[in-house]
Length: 347
Image 1 (spheres, rainbow, N blue to C red):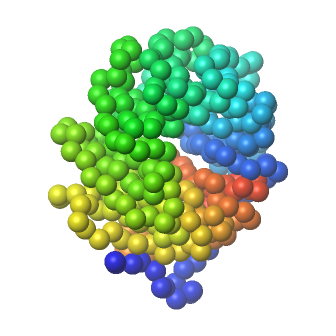
Image 2: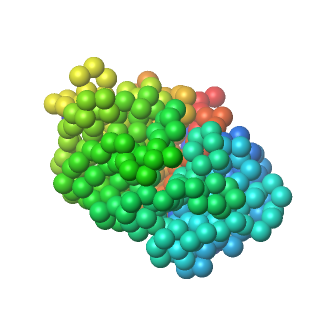
């Protein structure tokens, strides 16, 4: 298979560190506000820190969830942050005024995922088999029929007022105002993560059986890429919807989905980690791909130039990598509480 790597040490530089903070706890989720002003970091023990993204100054420290926070999501106007955790509650924090959070029971003891719509005040939560829709006042707008098994992921469809859920055996798409799913993609297996391509033509899932499944939205035609060493939780599309980067091994596997798609093709392999990849993120508009590994390495790859652009190491497993809206700053976090903002672009 083609491989990117093997560059001389002098060809790979360390990215500039803009700032760093320490949560003293495993950072389980990390998210820039849509306007780029704030960076929120959720600790597995419960607290959520909100930093000024440009400086690292702590703006707010929120108590989060008793027993642990698991997921966070920003509202489209960057004024509210939603969170879910192991206490079964959905909480909505007003970051601007600092008012007491709105909260509601999500339907099960563990809130797996919360996700705001891209441009409206709609928030979906997944807890156990329960899928529910809310607004920022904490008002329940819609309850959906129980899923056949625990919901593993939820994602809003790019450019649409639809969202998609995954669980064992299916991926299902819903409208905000309709209880029954509009469409289901069936597959006999345990789905861990899902990712829509930016053009909304394809949906990919990372699976428990060490495979990546892939559907064409319009036709429902599907294919599978198997043979990964470990289960696949890491998926990232580039902004053109051509490249799908996946984890599932110590090598980042990148599939070219142009033309007739990845079936029967050899993927690009990016070799920069000693242990399995733990997180992936493409820039919003550019060609840079960031990857983090369980050994602590953060790598930044330039697919256009086919090179490893920058590399650094964190203390502990890399838990999240996220590009800021400006596509210049890269926020990374670790299992030992490090939150660091890097600037890896070439000078």
